[in-house]
Every structure is written in structure tokens, then in C-alpha cells.
View 1 (cartoon, rainbow, N blue to C red):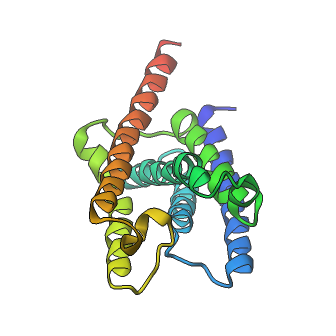
View 2: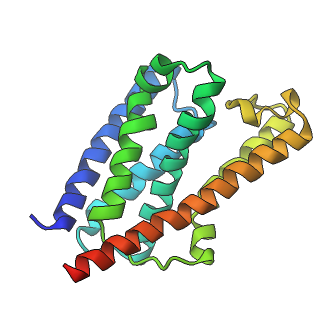
Length: 204
């Protein structure tokens, strides 16, 4: 079996797991609540996986970029859950990692996406600052919309660091800079590892 065949299988598994996760979201919340970055990033990943499956072994540059950006988005979810929300929510492992859709959206889908993208998918996106920044568009759009809705008091949160009226302006700015700065670094690392894997495969 060729490596790109493995990528197709992983994307198929990902689609199934995302659908299960969304069904569980609907059951737990009564709706697909798009104020949650977790849900939005996983829907983005689902769309990119479907497009990748239809592309088979020859994805277009836009599909390749969607795979890159959506993988980055769910990895942001994964790492924010572990390093930010987990401590903030008193290390509630049961809720964050085992309840409802969380095993799928917080853990399984992000990790499958990471392995598939890095080692089993065709992706020729050049690793430069322009592409790294473009991969953040999805996250930036979410941040602008949710911060605006919080400022207008239409939405409260849903994450503690988005609750602008429960923390100082400086703290809100620090959170924004920290998360987006980390995301930019992560976007570079993803393509760096991808390039390294391609180089090693060529040598072998």
C-alpha cells in the first residue's frame, strides 16, 4: 500500500469520526453551536477531508492549503484544550477528554489529521511567512467575530479568555497575541516537519 493510500484511508476515518462528533454535539447542546472554535475547526477539517477524498491522490493547491490550514486549526484546539482550558477548568479530564463529542473533537480528529497531513498526504505548500500567515485566516476570522460579539454582549465567551468584561483590556490583548503568535509558530513547524519528511522519503 502506498503512503498516499494511507492518507485517503485516514481522511475517510476522519470524516466518519467528525460526523459522529457532530451528532454528539447536536445531542449534547441541542444544536451545532458555532460560537465554539472546537466545533468550527472540526467542521473545517471535515470539509477539507471530504475535498481531499474527492481529489484522491492529486489534490489541487487549494485543497492542499485547506488541509494545511484545517490541520493547524484543530491542532490549535488540541493544544489550547491541554495547556489552557484543562488548567482553567480545574483539570477536569472527564469533561474535556471523555464527555460527549470531546474525545472526537478534542483528541482523535486532531491527532489523525496531524499524522495524515505530515506523513501520508501530498502537500507542496511552500513554507514561508506569507503562507504561514494565510493559514491563520480561519482563526483570525473566528477571533474577530467572537471578540466583537463579546464586546457587544451578544455572546459571553464561550471560552474564559474571550470574556472581555471579566478581565482587563491588557489581559485580553495578551491572550490574543499569545494564541495567535503560538498559532503562527505552529503553522511554520507543521510545514517544516512536512518538508523534512519529504526530504527523507526522497533519500530513501
